Image (cartoon, rainbow, N blue to C red; front, side):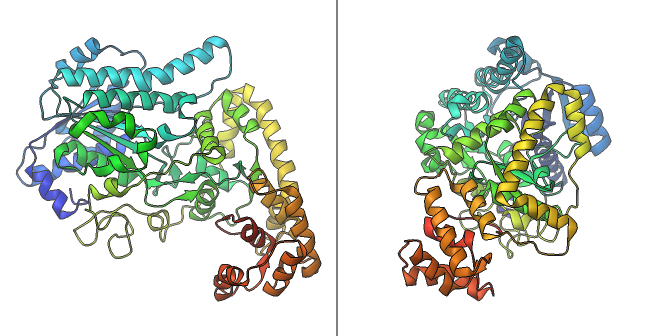
Length: 561
């Protein structure tokens, strides 16, 4: 397994061969975990060790195996077999016990990796359709994995690995079927950890550097959240400040594979003291030493606004025009049918993070240390190559977003054909789509983004700048509902800004101080100079209205203005 650090390679060679049962092998994370496990098998064989076995659980095992044989070849597939499993209907411990027992599962060298999950589709329609959709989420995310885990416990399986989500800690987690089901499963598994080793990896936002997508593979049939910044006007729900901790899918997959192929007792276990304790870890602590809970998140915290802005750059988009809108019309559209990985479940959780009183952040220290020890959890230019592999043979740390995409640009345009196909297949989405488009245009006009988008088409090589009035509208759209920010105060600041800046979009620091005094905001010269010294160092001596407003109201804008 050449991507592993030398220490991890040595650990892998010291293990007995594992029979790994993998559910969800065709998913965004699952197919990468499958690939990493096969690398582990090849690595063990290369060193004269028995490779172990991989058993894939799939609703279409014949189709899956046919694709994998074509991708990997017969030689690498010698250690792989597949069995049909239906998470929508296979919900009893007895059924799973017989199913897994028939596959030879049992004993300490058997490992079950549960990556199957359902994030949600449309919920609009008849009462029966809504009930069916909710039942499907509950069945796949709770009933099936819990029954499988109980069967594993009865069979003496050596390790059960659960793919959970950071969303279980969101303020509205109990109101959203996806996160509610995952949280219930996590608790049920923790109760089994007194007799069976259990690892729960609470994944955050997962992206793929190769395809520049989030949460799902690049597919001609679906839209992806990263398509939004390719639009002339990018809709951003709420303030866009929801904190995200993006992780490259390869970083997550290789850690999950390593956990599956190694002894769980030797892995880091101090993550129980991290931020999960408030809602998730406290009820799970009864699992004792056999339970491990990881904040399986990336090494940096960025906002939704900044994430979309970066993906615009990664995909070669010349402009990024954010338009801040309300949630309601987007939710109405997603109630009919999810737009790829942009689902009503996701929007509900996003809203909880942006508007709630509790912010959910994970500590990736223990997760990162699985493959690199305590000193190098986050990658740097000296420890990780551009492709994400280790360069010193000691560590394989988590990559930051910019490091993952360093030197690469995947140029794409917005897949309008996919969206029109979506409307054709789901005609009930046409009306909410029209209403959302009208809201987007009106908000763009008020915030100045429409003018910017039109100018970018007319003069693509000219840097378009928003007027002070447009900046004020954009600031209010993003922060107007926050405590401590009132429309009257922003308008007072705008009038003073225009007066002292002769109606310019940016003014000198001296004029900005005068504007603050005129608007009734006392100026602390030391704080002011400290806040804007870096701008002067970067050659941006003038201060925009948004920059000044962020200073006054103690806000972080992030990205370009």
